[in-house]
Image 1 (cartoon, rainbow, N blue to C red):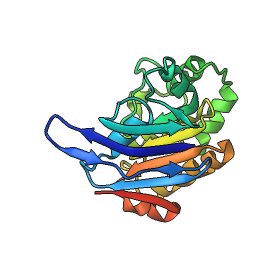
Image 2: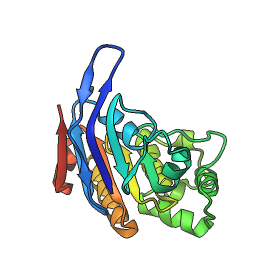
Image 3: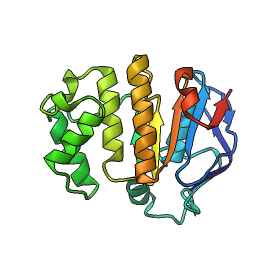
Image 4: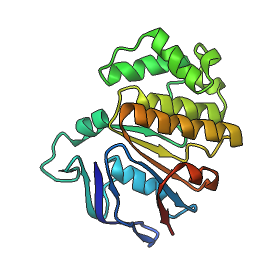
Length: 209
């Protein structure tokens, strides 16, 4: 599903990072651990096609996503990947429900209000459907961001520090939900984090130093 080879990134500060090679089979769950500055977010940005590596290759479904001939890369990646950001961005003028509805429409999917409520109930946000996103706590916004990443049933789910703003109980609940949803969608799940509380939930792990 996802394979990388000799990925490197060079920062203007002079810092260079050489990432270990990844080989993630379809439906597998991966945790990438590392301290601040180890390149965790940069790795996810490369895997999602947001950032081009200084060197190396990324294959998704045997497709080289940085091949210069791949002219429709952005559209293809958007339809195959779901990305839950550490600090998700929403349309502040819209409610929680309308943010999810808008996202679904942009991905070409119609979503019913009953389905939205079901998603929100899964992450303990059922009472927040008509709230504005700026009224949510950082942890609630992270949970909403994960829902948004799943709406179009992606083959790959990427999550950046999903538990960083959560207490122990909610961190465990969210990681379990992510894994359960990945299994339901048969999606490959890659989580990057410095949160060692969630290590026990992942058999496949990689450490960035």
